[in-house]
Amino acid sequence: MQNRLTIKDIARLSGVGKSTVSRVLNNESGVSQRTRERVEAVMDQNSFSPSRSARAMRGQSDKVVAIIVTRLDSLSENLAVQTMLPVFYEQGYDPIMMESKFSAQMVEEHLGMLQRRNIDGVVLFGFTGIDETTLGPWQPSLVLLARDAAGFASVCYDDEGAIITLMQRLYDSGHRHISYLGVPHSDVTTGQRRHDAYLAFCKQHALPVVASLPGLSMKQGYEQVASVLTPQTTALVCATDTLALGASKYLQEQRIDSLQLASVGNTPLMKFLHPEIITVDPGYADSGRQAAAQLIEQINGRSEPRQIVIPATLS
Ligand SMILES: O=P(O)(O)OC[C@H]1O[C@H](O[C@H]2O[C@H](CO)[C@@H](O)[C@H](O)[C@H]2O)[C@H](O)[C@@H](O)[C@@H]1O
Image (cartoon, rainbow, N blue to C red):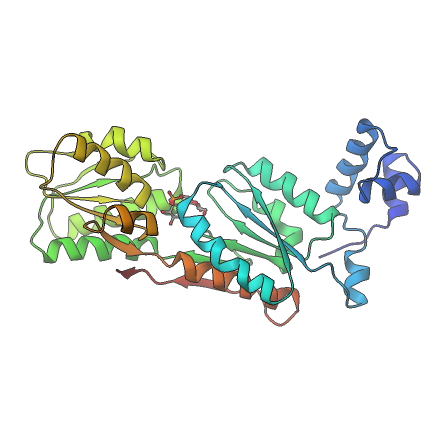
C-alpha cells in the first residue's frame, strides 16, 4: 500500500497539531467529534495509513484481518466464513467481522477505518455496484469473494456451471417443463449469470421458458413461486437454497407434491429440512479456506493476487 504522507502532513492539511492526529489514530478521547471527522476525512482522501509501512519495514504487524460480509444472516457466506476462521487462527491472525448490507458506501467507510487501524488484510464479499476505485489502496492485501475485479485477488463460484448442472440432471430424468425462480439482473452473478445459463439451456434443448426473478429472500421465493407454475410444470430450479426454502413452504401449504425442486447451495439447513431437493454445491466451504490462505500468502509477500474459480458439484 502506498503511504507517502506523514502524520505531520495530515496535521497540516487538517489544521490541527500532530498530537491531535495521534489521538484520532489511537481512538483516544480529548478530540471533538467535528475535529475527529475532519482529520479522518483528510486521512481517507489521502489513503493514509500511519504506521503500516513503518511496521512492514520492521517486519511487524498486528496480525489482524477483517472479513466484510454482505449479510450476517446469509447461509452461503456463513459457510465460507466458518472455514476461513480456522485458517486465520492457525496462522496467528485475529479476524474481525463487519457487514456491508450490499452498500458500496459502507464498504468505503469500513475500509477507511480498517486502514487507520493498521489492519493487515481484508476478505471482502463483493457485490455488483461496489466501487473498485475504493479498493485500489488495498489491492496487495485484499481478497474478493464471490466477485472478481481486474487486478485483484478473488475467489468466485461457477454460476453458469451450477445452473447447467442442475438443468442437465433434470433433463436427463425426463423433465421438459422446468421453471426458474431467480434474482434480478442488477445482481450480475447470482442474478444475471444464473438466469442466462437457464435461458441458454432452454434454448439449446428447445424447452419453454417460464421464469421470475424476485430477489434473494426466502419471502420472495414463497410469494413468487406461484407465478412460475403452469399446468405442465414438472420441475423448478431455484437460483439459491434460500429461494427454494421459501418456494417449498408455499408448495407444502398448497399440498403440491408432484414438483421436483432443485437449487444452488447444498446448505446444511436445506439438506436437513429437504433432502428430497436436488442441490448443487457451489463450494462455499472451499471458497472460505482458499480466500483465507490466499490472503495470508499475499500479506506475507509470497503470492501475487490470483483469481480462483471454484467448480460446482452435484451433491
Ligand atoms: O441466501 P444465501 O445463502 O445468502 O445465498 C444467496 C447467494 O449469496 C451469495 O451471493 C450474494 O452475495 C454475494 C456476496 O457474497 C454477491 O456477490 C452476490 O451478488 C449476491 O447475490 C452467493 O455468492 C451465492 O452463491 C448465493 O446463492
